[in-house]
Each structure stands twice: as C-alpha cells, then as structure tokens.
Image (cartoon, rainbow, N blue to C red; front, side, top):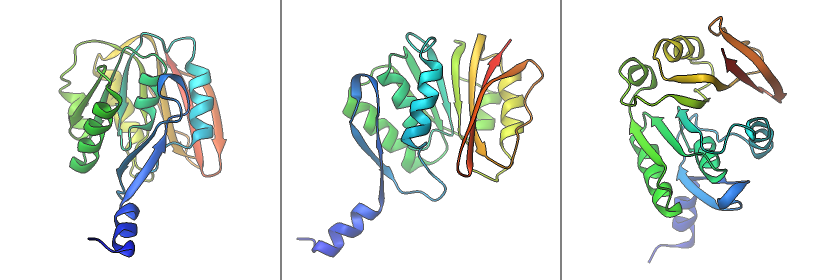
Length: 196
C-alpha cells in the first residue's frame, strides 16, 4: 500500500483542468504535468467562448498544441460538432484520448504529431471554422504556424483563429486575417482573428 506521501507525489504529477460551460460544466479532468503546459485560465476561456458563442454550435474546430485539451474540450462541451486535437507529446495525447473517453465525446479525435508537420500534410480535408492556437511561449512558433495554417487550405470561409501569446509580443499574421478582439491577462495576451 502506498504511503500518504507517495500518493501525494502521484497527484503532483497531474495537472487539472475544469470545464466551465456547456454540457460538461464543472467537470474536472486530469492531464500529465508536462513542462510548459499551462491550461488557458478559466477567466480567459470564459471571455473567448463569449466571443465565439455565435459561431460555436455545429462548428468543426482545430486545437493546435492541444496540451491539456482545455480549449477543444470546452468547445465540444459548448456544442462544437467536432474537434481535432493536434499534440506532439505522447503522454498528453494519451490523456486527451482518455478524457474524451471519460466524457463519452464522439466528436473528438487526437493526432500525435508536430503541429507544423501536420499542417504541411494534413489528414483532414474538412475545413475548420474555429482554430485554437496556444503554442509554447518564447518558442518562435506563432508566425510559422500561422503561415502554414493559411497555406494549408484547412480554414473555412470566415474562420476564426484564436492565438494565445506573450503580452510583450504582437504576432505577425497573414494579411487576410483581421484582428477582431484582443485582451490581456497578466503576462498572457489573447487575440481572435477573422479570416477573410
């Protein structure tokens, strides 16, 4: 039998994310504690999904750098038709599969692959109405991923692209992307772009 300290240690190896709206409101899910993975805070998610409310029901969504899956799982909870989660980490991908099973979410699929490689050879042919992009901070990934996403043919007409980034970095995006909303919470800025 594991000691109290050993059990505590196991808990410290897990992160938690709480869904804040929709069918699975208040459900808490776990994911492996992996360096650099920081679920989008509740307050930021609430603001984001208020912005997306008019276009969320029935949408096909793409969650790049899915990590804990907080954004994509929240989208499914709030009526998205489907979410494709792209995550490179094997541990996080397994946890996403498990959390989708726990929620009995038939609309979610997980791809374990590097985001840039996946965008260059996408498995999906359906266009996405909403894209969530929350890359590791200070990794220089926002601009190349935005360019690859724009070139991929995966964006539906009038798609929305959410980008979470450092507050001291204004992302450079393709010219046909218009900034619709932007806010800041501490060191994190979050921007929603509309694609013409």
